[in-house]
Length: 198
Image (cartoon, rainbow, N blue to C red; front, side, top):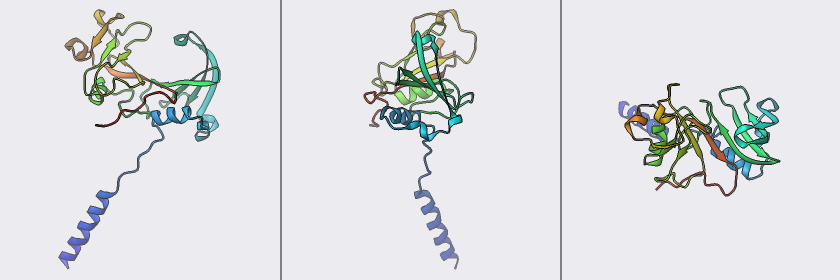
């Protein structure tokens, strides 16, 4: 009888291990960008209260844009930026549930370096587009997703308050404890949003 119970327990454990946990894609920003680019009615997946549409001047685009904000005024706030009636890109800058396969807002820069398999470079932290990441080598070099980083401290050392480019592995950069502060994904059928795993 003990052998039968042991056998049944073993079968139950093995069958549980074979079941893959369900993947929740509801906050997969890459999939959302692809869905918007395909022309499908992506807004139908959200309630009327979950999307705010407004037209306003946006300094970084130096012009007026229509913005559709998903989950406005929450930690999951995500912006879809349009030029006329054509979606151009989406971005988020809060530590919520939105994610990419390569990192998400709030994670240390090490998560992006690990996904890339190589160090990355970033621009100075004090001007127009602070902490813009540039990836010229590694697995993510051809990716069209844009990342920005910020230090955990509000005090930025003077050498990083510039337009210069810095390697993420230099000790001075490492001391900043950089984290991903914004992720921008183009909304285009031609955009490279994923890399193949080799």
